[in-house]
Image (tube, rainbow, N blue to C red; front, top):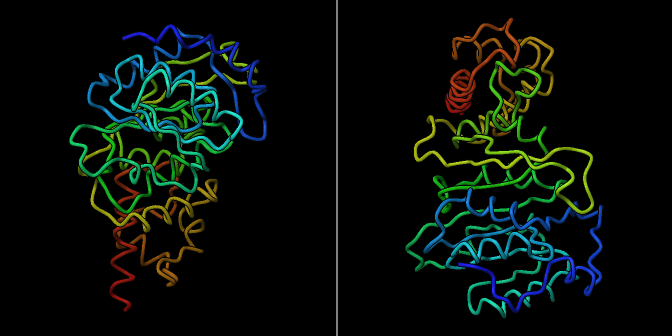
Length: 294
């Protein structure tokens, strides 16, 4: 499928509606049709797929997703200046683009999918740099798992992408984000996007990341794992016997020596030396100690 001829070039749309990218909103627009098309293809076959897009701006990626055959695109856009440009796309693709004005941080994308939709749903977005990590963390910490989405295809700054896929072998990038992503998804970097491809060009390279939710993550309580990772990496240069001293869960302080002994973890190790299985063991040990103290 291709874009309707009625849609004018994106640069013309941006000029006509006065859509100068705003730094405060983390906006960097993509005009390169080859790149937007490549991102849309990276999301996989889109027939019968509902796509949620965050921060579409003037709609470059939106056009590509619709042209690639998405059954429907639900676009969440905070910048009211962009709404008329998105309305033009909606008119060119009747009933296939739903525009949601608002802050993506306040919207659960799963609630936007019709209950009677039987096909897959995906999140595909060139996320605003200033909220990309926060959004991803919110989605990963959902109480409902596996989520409504079978794939997330997202663009981040390259340094954030490297943190998402990091392992203990990449200690500088390995942290809480890698633990959450590795626990609940299979994540990989698909390709890089040079700064010159954007308007205005950012100071960093970007990367498109694919995250496929795991149907059955290693069993543990989400809140316990998040608390362990936050405490351990919050003082990553210290040994676990020190970095976990401030740990509390469900309002209860957890004695570090008991936690480490129950999990079978050497307290002289540092967070960056532990793999995902170790963090899950610590989370389960913490949950068990809290339960036994009640």
